Amino acid sequence: MQLLQWLSCLRAGNTPHAVFLVGPAGSGKKEYARQAAALYLLGQEDGEKLAECPFYQELPDYAIKTVRACCEELNRQVFARGRRCLVIPDAHRLTAQTQNALLKTLEEPPEDALLILTGNEQAVLPTIRSRCMLVRVGAEDREKVAARLTKQGVAPDRAKLAAALSDGVPSLAERYAGEAYMGFRAQALPVIEEALFGVTPFAKAAELLERREDGKKRVGKDALCDFMDMLLSLLRDALLQQLGAGDGRNLDALALQNRVAGHFTTAEIQGMIAGTLKQRRVLTEFGGAPGVTLDALLVSLRQRETE
Image 1 (cartoon, rainbow, N blue to C red):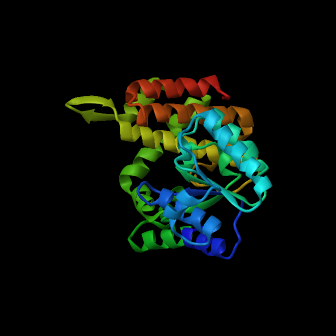
Image 2 (cartoon, rainbow, N blue to C red; image 1 turned 180 degrees about the horizontal axis):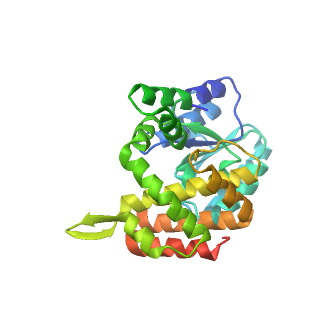
Image 3 (tube, one colour; image 1 turned 30 degrees about the vertical axis):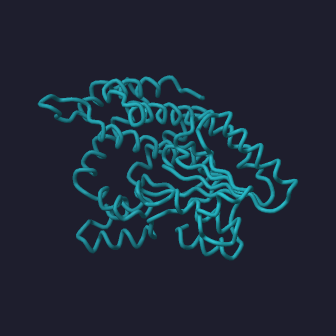
């Protein structure tokens, strides 16, 4: 669902109990979450008024004890009746263990409670994502995005794939439709398959991701982020397939998706997602060395971690 559609439903008093606002960086997800919370609780779209509302919570940090405390408070407030709202900005910063602690509240929400998450959907567990209604900030209908790319001279099949990979975010779709990204993707998918099913391809992956920096060849941070996002997207689609859900993105990798879904258990796929998310945080939040992070990622795929 697109943002304006959801806000219109919210004004009419119709919204699911859990919503995940997703979109590119800088799209205003947090501000829209607060706007929606104010609309839900106060009947007006002024997020600044939430400071005066005792039934509004915004997660202050990402510790598991904080998440549990906020969920307990949400349940306690049921006795006071009336609406309550919990906003979790940048939900992708929650560890896998903390995300699992949030699951019970998402599965059995208190009456008249609204949970709004924001962040990178690829960096949360599919079990969290599947229990929320996705609201795309800055997104359009995939078919419209694909049609626009086609008018710009992109081949129809590539335009459809780029629109699916971007989930209708025009700026991402344009990037994904480009020769550089598609060429990289064509080389990356076989390496991902080998990492999942063959001998761990340390050398192949390093060679694929090498970029020249300061006169030397090193694993590039941006290339590694793209590689991990491709892996996360594929694992997510395979897990959704196991759960009987649709909404797949990887139209050019359906055979690999089927292989993953048929070979690994749900717990194993969740473990690989958790391991990949862990290494992505090391790289992007803690300044991990790309080469070391890549090796740790490839090792984690073999460990089948189930955090």
